[in-house]
Image (cartoon, rainbow, N blue to C red):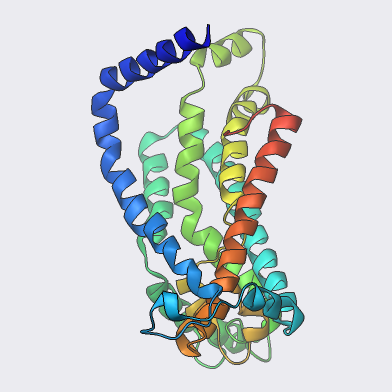
Length: 313
């Protein structure tokens, strides 16, 4: 029985491959790029377990085991503020980005003037293409304490006596970073939700309108439920990036006055790996971050599957 099932399954897989061979050929470049730049570099993880010295042969290096991993927790209290900063800003950014994009897509769908809707969508999508270097320059010009346009205006009009130090005061760091990220990615994230709205059949709206449902009721009972599966998928996919921060953003906005609230795991890895040249320690921290991210995405997927019966795997 087993001898006949296995070949039958093999023939079925082969038939599917032949039938969809052009789709697989289209995916081939992506597979090659991921293999070259995401999987082959994993061989470098070995330096986290040895007494690595640049230029040395791996076979001649002393095996250190998990010493670098234990150093992160046993000999350093850095992980306390690092995890606090990373989780606070990344979870805040995840929730804010998804909620703002969700609401914005709902509002965009209710605009009946086509040209006006396209114009707003284009304007909100444009910041996604602006680099963080330019955004930092704009932020410095607008929010700098002494010469920032907004602070000068507030002080000049007598609204405040002294300008707000948005770029240097630690108490503004988290809110400022989350707000900048939401502004930059609003248009990009909303496109996904707008696409999910477009996939909802018009027959639902027509049937609801015949039954006497007003505009708000059609949004509440049809549009929003139709967007929830997309929201869940995005939440699951983004949960794996909870410990990954936008390096360029935090590298540019971190300074000596706000570093205590701004330093995240990616900046910490950069500091020890490329500035202090402690490659084994930086690699060990990166490995821990990767495995925790994998655990998070699997856990969130399992919770979503049990609670909503919706999952990505």
